[in-house]
Image 1 (cartoon, rainbow, N blue to C red):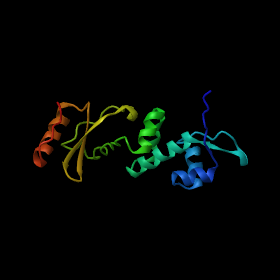
Image 2 (tube, helix red, strand yellow; image 1 turned 60 degrees about the vertical axis):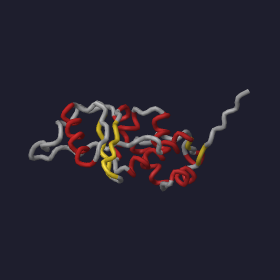
Image 3 (cartoon, one colour; image 1 turned 90 degrees about the horizontal axis):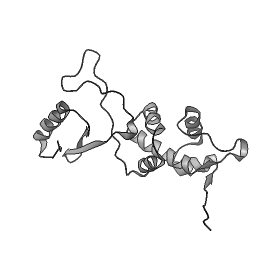
Length: 161
């Protein structure tokens, strides 16, 4: 016989475990970042999925992602992907800001079509200790050329063409 232990949390306990205020948990539920809890009223409980998701949100916020981007990343993510984010085992790639209003930046490719951020993969290139460059693995030849130029200034790192 297999017994599965289900952990539940009251609102304050969940907030304490995740390192956020109870009102933040309520706000995330209202905003759609967290699913609604199982029960309402004084018997409302939250589960392990809520805790994992809160930890992933916190980690994405530490990477300076806005809540809209966080919500988009989590919407299509599997539980395993959210667990990797929450545990710190996933690399969080932050895209470049959009081009300036007066025209595209001369070293940036045109913005790519909107992709599902949960399935994007990036290659991390350490230029010097403390400075990293992220290149999406499906980047075009122009982006790879620019990455190679930057690397040539700071050392030899293989970009795997």
